[in-house]
Image 1: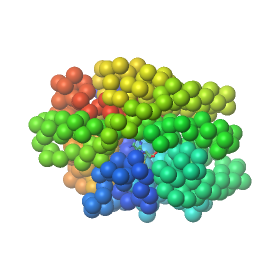
Image 2: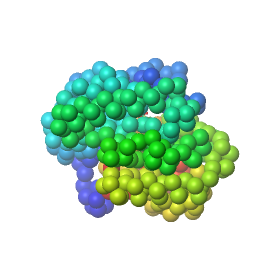
Image 3: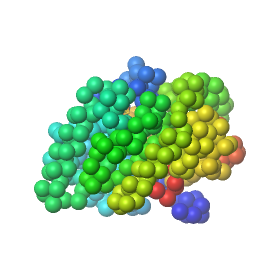
Length: 362
Ligand SMILES: C[S@@+](CC[C@H](N)C(=O)[O-])C[C@H]1O[C@@H](n2cnc3c(N)ncnc32)[C@H](O)[C@@H]1O
Ligand code: SF4
């Protein structure tokens, strides 16, 4: 998409709906419910069904790409209504899921299918469960098998079923082993390999001070939930990560499996730079983050932000204004203006693996 087109957008072309904060798992690295996650102790919110449908209807004229998010999006009671409304309106919708509800919801998922389900698994059983919780691996793989079998039996093409793997110090040596030995790749439609997003205490502190000054927010809890100790990442075997991701990429090419990875460039030095915070050495540098010009996130309390990773600045709320009013309003304009004044990136942006993604792939 050209810059001119991006700037002409009167509505966002990529919309993430954080349907609910609630989640049944406590994955260790999770910035929401993990060891340092931001959601502990907060009041759990979920979006009102009618408000979500209103947002969808308002955005549908530009046929945005929708993503349903959480928490665990399958815990949202009106999940099927939301997917149905988007699909009837002719737009696409993808859903990341922890996969633990797939078995129970398989019928619903083939009746009213999202385009793609991204099932989170982070390694072979022992490794995945060390990161995502006891018995999660088995439960998820059973759910995938049930859903796959039902979809095939009914002769349907959707939902497409694929996996998201999060590379962390715990999982980084098990990438190839998982995709090669734990899955039948002929049954997989898409794969995403993403790197753990984290911020150092210093990065978070700088970010909080800057956002206080620029936007008047007192705290930046999302960035706080991303905090981790950089020493945990220094010892990772970056050559091994490169070799394994290269293997997965080739395996996908051979079988026509849609493949994405963040950061995009498969190179050990790129990975070292990312995990050790040497952002200037990254191969995937951009001169600015493009998200605030195309992307909108609706948090579970109705707040709208233009960032998926550090959604700490509410720029409006769907219970008070229309999407169009917020998207074209003063707060959003000011956010874009401040981002450009900072040179197109805030200091924290380097920590966001999505920032290194390919803007043409979603
Ligand atoms: C926050 S979860 C929400 C959806 C659902 N609960 C799930 O686990 O798929 C979305 C994705 O973010 C991943 N994730 C969690 N913590 C992360 C982190 N610190 N860095 C990068 N990705 C992370 C999850 O593994 C999952 O693939
Ligand atoms: S299942 Fe998803 S939202 Fe829940 S703790 Fe794990 S990564 Fe976080």
